[in-house]
Amino acid sequence: MDVRVINELVHQQSAFVESLTAEVGKVIVGQKTMVERLLIGLLTGGHVLLEGVPGLAKTLTVKTLADALEMRFQRIQFTPDLLPADIVGTTIYNQAKSEFVSKKGPIFANLVLADEINRAPAKVQSALLEAMQERQVTIGDTTHALPEPFLVMATQNPIEQEGTYALPEAQLDRFMLMIKVGYPTKDDERAIMDRMTSGMKVTATPVANPARIAEARSVVNQVYIDEKIRDYIVSIVHATREPKAHGLGQLADFISFGASPRASIYLNLAARAHAFLRHRGYVTPEDIKAVGVDVLRHRVILTYEAEAEEITSETIIRKLFEHVEVP
Image 1 (cartoon, one colour):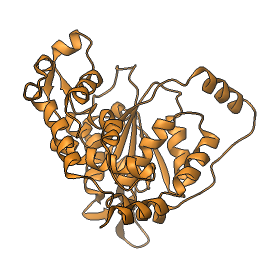
Image 2 (cartoon, one colour; image 1 turned 180 degrees about the vertical axis):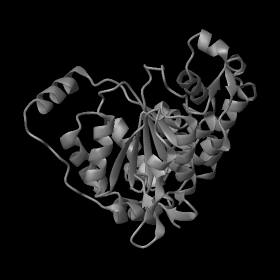
Image 3 (tube, rainbow, N blue to C red; image 1 turned 180 degrees about the horizontal axis):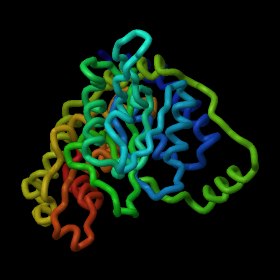
Image 4 (cartoon, rainbow, N blue to C red; image 1 turned 60 degrees about the vertical axis):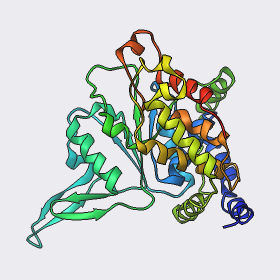
């Protein structure tokens, strides 16, 4: 397909983006990056992990987004005593009909917020994993498809590590993006305080619906990505595994494991969605750089040496982007 045609198509289909951001902005002050990353997840079907201290409006943002998109929202508070059946559902005996029937759990929603996901034990995390990967759930001996679109947005608190179960690497890898949510600026905080103490309740009104998102998704898949940019993505991911081959020998001691092939797939998809949100029908290296840290942050496993020297995966990823040749 001709790039001009795709450009035109993207222009038409991404028209709702501004009104959606404005609608979310009525409730949420600032946090534009977080909102944009959640939209990238929605447009590509990639799950999102949010990390930040309590009170930064993570839950409120996801709930507001669901309101503005007329999507079914469910929040599951993860606790150490949670059972897989509390998430996916269970079979119950119907005495009137003398038969077992499936009672669906809160996972059957469009946007599922897994709050403090690292508080639940491995058994529960693996039940969620099946749903995230297969987009279906087995209750008893019946398999149920999850609604479309289906997206898990999980939060974890970086401070309190007591009584938490670190997410296994395999599960972290299932998340397309890991977003660090920071504190608001001084001006934003003043606006938040004024808005939240005014006594007026503000909610988002719908500006799009799941069908609109499904249409937008099919357009995102058509966004043009040049051969050179595809090679650039692979070079970046490859550099996390073999930094020496890219003239970054000094980083070799700090990387225990590089990113998996999922990173290349997700970088490609996220960059397309990033271009779409900017009403562009083609991907530029800037799109890759913009989403690169969020896609790779949780996929580069550091050595003890890096931790001892207080080197973060972000520092390493930024160094890779500085060194790998841009097409």
